[in-house]
Length: 317
Image (cartoon, rainbow, N blue to C red; front, side, top):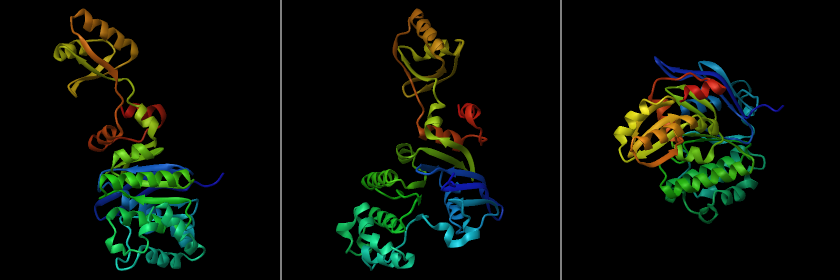
C-alpha cells in the first residue's frame, strides 16, 4: 500500500509560552481535496510550514508520501508543490519570465511545462505582461502555475482566495476543482466555509492549535440530522408546547420561527398536538446545519475532543 500524501502525527510548535500547534494529527489520502479549516491565528500556516520542513516541530513528525522533509531534505518534496501565504514574484518581469526563473531552479522538464501551466490557470493571454500589473487573483493563479511546473502529485494551498473579489474566488474554486479532476491531491488551508463545503471531501477543523474535528465532510454535516425548523401561527405557544413533549429537545427561537431536535415519531406527535391546540403550522421541515454553523459551534464554544465514529457524531450535536 502506497504511503499517504500527507501524514502528520502529534505535531507541536511553541513560540515562548504560546502553543501555536498543539498535538495535531492529519492524514490526507491520495486524490482527496482536503480542507484544513480554522479561524485566523489557529495555527494553520504554522502546520503547513512544518509539513514542508520549513520550520522544525517541537514534537511529532510529518511525512509527505512517507518521506520526512527534516530527514530527507529536498528529496522529500518530490511531487509536492504549492505556496504558504501569498506567492512572491518579481513585479518588473513578465509572468512567463517569472515562471522561467522558477523552472530554472526546479530543473528537469519544468521549463517544458510553462505553456501548459499558463493554459491551466488561464493566464496565457497575459503571460507577456509585467506581474506588477496583475490583479491579486492573477498573481494567485500565477503562483499555482509556478507550483504546476513541478508536475505535483500533492498541492498545498494556504488561503488561496484571501483578498479576492467574488469573481476571483469563483475562478480559483474552478481551478482547484479542475486540478483535483486531474488526480492531484489538494490540501487547502482556509477560513472560508463556502469554498470548503463546495470543494472538499474531508476536513480538519482547528481551534487554537488543536484539531476539534477530523474526518469526512459529509459525515460532519450528517451529525445535525434530526433538527427541524418550525413556523406556526403562534410560535410562543408552540415553543412552550414543544418543550413539554417527550422526544423533543433544544427548542430555540431562530430565523423567524423555531428550531428543535426530534426523531420522526416525536415530530409526528408534535404536529398532531399543535393542531389539537389550535396552532396552525406554516412550515415544519428538516434542517441540516451548514458547515459555517458547525464551524462556529466548534471554534467559538468549549474545546472538544476528537472522537471517532458514533462518539464523534454525538460530540458535535
